[in-house]
Image (cartoon, rainbow over all chains, first blue to last red; front, side, top):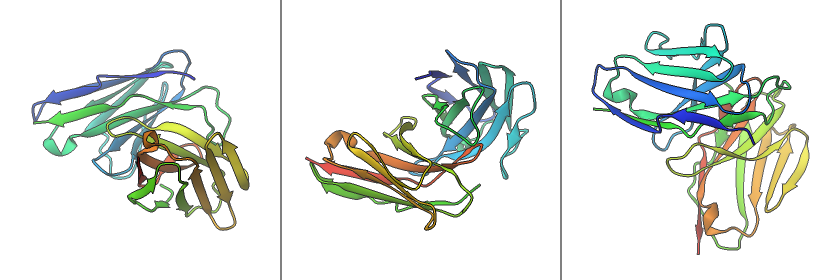
Length: 120
Length: 108
């Protein structure tokens, strides 16, 4: 299957600093990428949908100015957590949708390995 | 987001037994249904997808879909200790909505 590489796999940062997480589709083009957040013992919660060349669509309750998403190419999307606070500590996971994809949502979505963010 | 409900468990089964996982969803118009397995600290991996009513079998896994009842299930036959994980039900249109997951423990 297709490979999605997410980097870094874990990061520790100080409160108030910013952290950038990269999501790359290694062997396919992804017009759409999704960013999820998962707190311990909870399910994945969709934060935003990132479309190449356009602004991301954020889910209700997700601060777009705090979680900056850039999808500048068909193989790379980045999530920047700005002014991170301890409550932002979580497991962040990206998912890339193979382009073109057969709607509705098909099996052609692949997850990155996830990034464990700890804000101290 | 669409509501997807799962029993959180934990579900404990002896090795070799059948593990049965259930999931209900709120949007009657949903068309695509997925089961993911997630080990602790890892991202989800796809086990099964199902679009049509009825059963779909893949190895030791069987997914069952009943759109009239808005119900999808996963059976794991001949459970192995390596099957111990959290199983996530997901429903999709152009994005995935996940259930909270059911934690399964297979006792050796």
